Structures are given as C-alpha cells and as structure tokens.
Length: 155
Length: 80
Image (cartoon, rainbow over all chains, first blue to last red; front, side):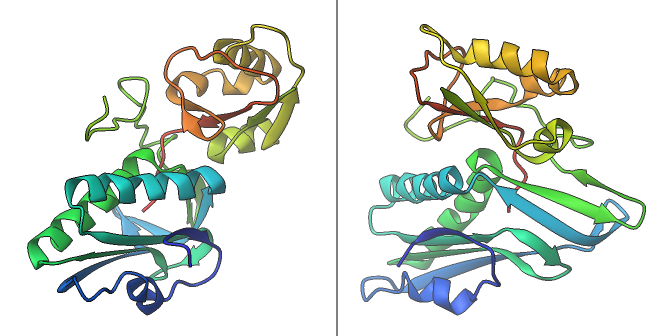
C-alpha cells in the first residue's frame, strides 16, 4: 500500500481514507480537489496534469513527514491524479487522521498548501480558444528566493 | 553522462522531455543551464524561473554534479 501516490486513473476517496484510519485516531479530514470549470471568468473544457512522477511521490512523502514532525500521531495519505481530467473529476485526495479533530483540519490545509509549493505537478488548462500550462505562463509565479520555501525546520 | 528532464511548457517548447549531455569533469548545474539555453534558445526566458532538481532533490544555486546524475528543470508548479 502506497501512502503517497501519483496515479493515472480515477481516485477512490474511500480507498485513500482507509489507508490511514486507525484506532488511535478519532478524526479523519478529507480534502478533495476537483477540476473547476470557471477560472477568472474563463471556461475550462478540461485539464491535463503532468508530473515528475518519482520526485512528486517523494515530495508528497516529505509533506507527510513534515506533518508527523509537527503532530507525531498524525497519519497522512495523499493521491494525485495526472493525465486528462474533465470538469468535476477528482484531481487530488488528502486524508489526514489525528487523535482529535482540530489537528486533522489544520494538517489537511497544510498538505494542500505544500503541494502547491514543492510537488512537481503541473496543470494545463484547455479552453475553447486555446491552452496554457499554468504556473509558468500567464500566472507566472517564479520562485522569489530561487527555490521553493521549505518552511518547517529547514531553511 | 547527464540526463536532463524537462516538463510542462519547457518540454513543449523544446519538443523533448528527456535529453542527454556528455559528462565533463567538474560540471555543475550552471553548466547544464548554459548548455540548455544554447541548445534551445526558446527556453532562455524560462530557465531563471525554473528550480533545478538533482536526482529528484531540489538543488539551490550552483550544485556540483557527478557522472550519471539526473538534472530536472522544475517550472513553478501548479498541482492540487
């Protein structure tokens, strides 16, 4: 069973959740990211995700480690889908189990924010009148410090 | 030999996602950046915005390489 996975097929939310359910944990927080049709008024027909797969799985595992450093009892599983995704398809599922609910909310949020910073996955929006890789074209977000912010205990 | 990996818009503009570069003693990531820009001038504006990873670990600044390393150019990511 892989806790941190890049897949090319539809993701089962329940399967991701079942990886981390544990008798010591009384809370499971699930974050499900889906493909949005409208972005800044522009209609997306479908998305295409690409990943540097081996590194992306390693970086997802790193996020899990970061969470466990902050909350040793937390259990984390993350699956991200790549390839062509249609509107409302599930792109990412994050499951965080913790003994009490507050931590499960907090670290679920932490995980999705970190995915957007340090995991090599890219999306391409396809519109009626064109297409673009996001993050490195119109909505350019270069790394201001020359590298992703690692945060946590590392600088 | 150094394997160079490109992704997203960089791969599209180069028309390739995996390149190889012959090894020279003392090579660094800066040498790979220079080589990439010379070989694919269209990538020159994108290279400074991309992070470099060596063997799947982010490498800040100029990192020394060894024969057989995999150097990946990671444009700003947009997963999630």
